[in-house]
Image 1 (cartoon, one colour):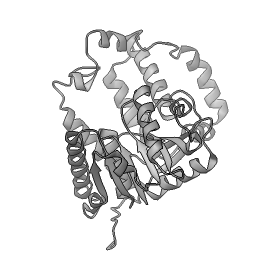
Image 2 (cartoon, helix red, strand yellow):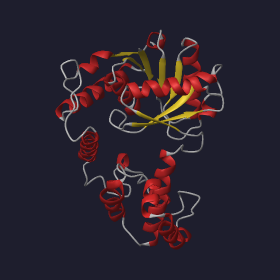
Image 3 (cartoon, one colour):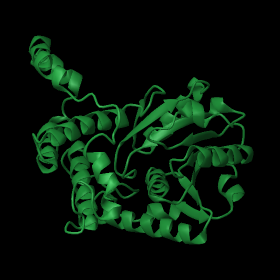
Image 4 (cartoon, one colour):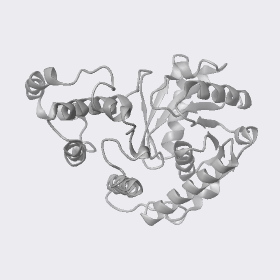
Length: 315
């Protein structure tokens, strides 16, 4: 099967590698030759990292990826095309509409987005039934979960075809409703809103929050989800806890009311700006990303039975 990825940024590059690792032939399209070279370099770095960490035998997946500035060539005879440009509705509309014109009628067209409605994204399309959102999370070549979000006119066959391809490439598809943020981003924002609220009250620090989430709450999540835990603990106990805690939970409706707004007003907008909740001038962003990826790899190995599982014909 031949797939296309439209976009050469972080998400597009990592999705292309993910598809290639799953055995698909992939064409990556970008407007600029420089962007394609950056995408190629990122894919090479990530493929080499997987070999070093023992998740892949070699870098042969790269041989299944080609890069081009010719969109018609990228989309020729493909059965799955993934739009992966920045989170701007107008930009996505333009690219999705143009791509649909160049795709065969039977192809599945998808967009990777963390919050934009698939119903709105499909507005310029003449075949909205063949469109669905596939929300990959960073880093897309490592994170197994991909949300599959149909719009109002997406056909069940399109959902099934997209989910099947994701499964073939080693992903765990989860079908979600077309609601703001789908499920992953909603959970992420709900947790962040509560922790920002507590930081603003002076009850905790960002460092304490990250420590509790990473080494406490998150450590058992791979084995037990929230509803499983509620049943295990007993709904009587959970109900008693809820009566004490829920009235005190954050209810802020705007992110600029509190620490996030204060940081943004000072231009401290996160890692790329050098400062956010943390001072990234004294913490190494590249070292942080590397350790993040290594931790995800460690967890992948655990889910594979605690040992390295090599792919390829010799495995």
